[in-house]
Image (cartoon, rainbow, N blue to C red; front, side, top):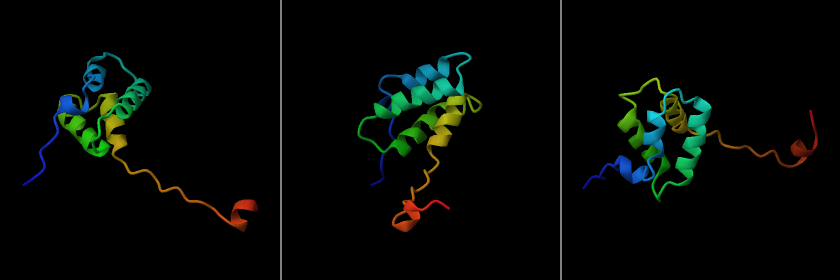
Length: 93
């Protein structure tokens, strides 16, 4: 039995993404702020899956929208932080 695809209203219950796509002249900076609010309010779901649902819902109609760029960037894996320990952390080169 396969997993069912989440619906947009399940991952955007407050309608933040829906409204962001409706705002004329919204900037990428404003979209990043809305994205953070949206991400912090996500229900207990995989955030990458939630982003994919939002892209599937809005990207085709608005491929050049700044929120589409922000959502796409949200799928890029973060770099793994590297800790410098021991002498290397204490001595500058």
